[in-house]
Length: 128
Image 1 (cartoon, one colour):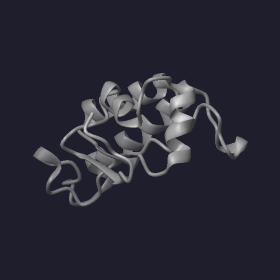
Image 2 (cartoon, rainbow, N blue to C red):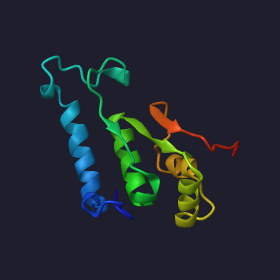
Image 3 (cartoon, rainbow, N blue to C red):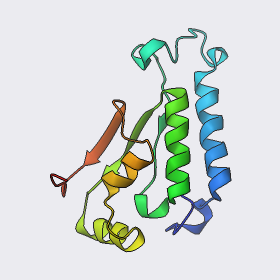
């Protein structure tokens, strides 16, 4: 969360949030982390512990943060998880913050929609 944090002590500067995310991912994919050294095998299918990029509540993430997280997910073949179109209130907040855009547009443009993405809720999706 680098903008509008609901709990200020959890907010971070964009560069610090991205550095922490990448440090965590690199820690988990380091073969020395596990005696089995199979955490991030080819295709991510057989890993015992896999890092997951989790943009927290879209209105608390800047476009720079989302794009940086998308870059980390791409470079390290990480899974991505988040919530999408879960309530009208959140959708209105996204519209206020990013006029004419929906959360799925933002995830897509940031490189966060991949075959390894899991999105919860999706209550208010549309055909666009």
